[in-house]
Amino acid sequence: MKLLFADMDDTLLSSDKTISKKNLEAVKALVGAGYGFVMCTGRPLYSCRVLADEYSLTGENYYIASYNGGQIVDTADMKELVHEGVSYDVVKTLFAEAPKRGLNVQTYNDDCILVEQDSEYIKWYSTRIRMPYRVVEDVMSALEAEPLKCIVAHLTDHDALVDFQKEVGPKLSKVTENLFSNPVLLEFGSKKAGKGRALENLCEILGVDRADTVAVGDEANDIDMIKKAGVGIAMINGTEDTKRAADVITEKDNNNDAIAQIIERYFL
Image 1 (tube, one colour):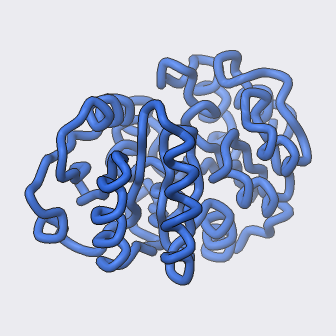
Image 2 (tube, rainbow, N blue to C red; image 1 turned 30 degrees about the horizontal axis):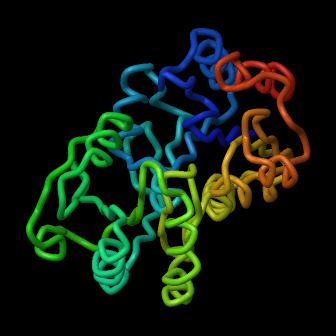
């Protein structure tokens, strides 16, 4: 079996956060031909399931690698195959340090985003990924288990996020990795997670050779996945670093059915 690992935002999804008719038909044809399709995304599982259910991208040979690979599920029975979260100590550090710098910080329970302050940012993010948020007095008390990731964010000040990455990231580097999923979102996850690790883990679980994988994405958090795939593809609308890491750059962007073109070339 061959597998297609596809990032969601600005890759599978158009800029309006929908899946085009042509991309959807191509994904279903791919799975119908006996191949596997993996949504591989920084989004939480809740958000992925909303989209997967809406577009009927569930069942045999459909997989979701959410939270940048921190959680992998088989949608045929929603069985969890991988679970790699971040420690409470990481959560404490990020929730203590980010507000000092005027940055937003969030984490997750299974059914909601958790923040300690309401903001225009969290309203935007919640709407963008179609997942509710909850403002709590103390995030540590609200967590039901160690979460799968945290995000430090700012809608307009990317430089402040870069500074945070340089200043705070190294203090957590023994247990976490941090990568931008777009210029607004700096994501902190387990060192045992990551999209590249997700590709390796799912191949091992399913008995698929990495040479039989294709991976496509547009951002920094996609680079390791692109490098580890049999064929690594960068979106033409992706970052320059992502393009340099890829074997192939798409001719079309996320608003013009690039995923369909990839499926037609490498699978059908």
